[in-house]
Image 1 (cartoon, rainbow, N blue to C red):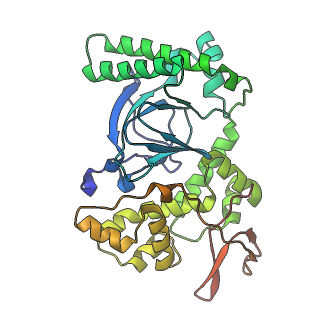
Image 2: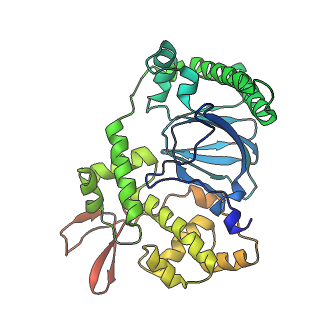
Image 3: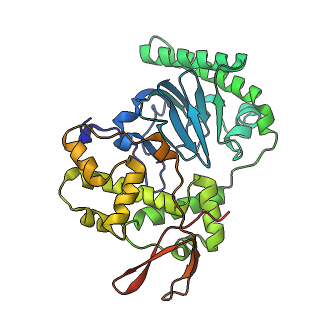
Length: 355
């Protein structure tokens, strides 16, 4: 697919999706997508206020939800809770097509504080211990949910008379089935911590704004008034990624269009996207896409971009076992890589998750 026609998830600096799903009067939608239509053949990390039902139709998709990975194949589905950061990529080299049903929760439960919201939806929506629910064909309730979701998709695509009413009824039924079948998971109700979410937004905003320059863990921790250790743990808890892993992935994502343009050398791109050297940039790019940026550019020019191996997608970013001190700032950072640039120690964000 041509670069300007690739599917994109529009987000703000905190990775909140900006697109409206449906309309204010009917806040739900059904989409049909192909992972190969996205840049890098993956849906980047994002989150939104809607519930999301994801249903692979061809090929196996890997969903990264917080710390956990879920491989979902045709005949299975995943319900993603609202405000949960998640991403998606192919499990291997095969093409992945999938359907997505997105619905704003209050469209189903009505007014906040109502019995339906308080008794049925709130134990799931505001429960940070249950970011998603997986379902397949193993039980009667799972098969029932899949059949009803197929019907939602069919009715939405057909758009027949009163389809809105039919879909709302089906989605309410689907949620009641899922909530009842999984009520034991809600027994240990853990309310989502809004302060933690606010701090995550601040950290993401800072990293996304300063990705093209040197960022120290102390600077990041200072933004949210936490210690370095607590900052690392909180970031990993809410995103499933280390600070290093997120920043490296974000930088590579920013480099994608620059590589495809063919207008810049690898050294220039590395400098523009915050990497300390062309070799470090190439290593990060290769980890994410399975080939060097130069090879990717060649493939792109021939309109046959390589497929990112699923194995590479699941690998954790390597950690350099060390503990060093930045002599200029006096900051001690665990598991860092310090590289000499311009006569000064440049502290690269290769920070191990501090659990």
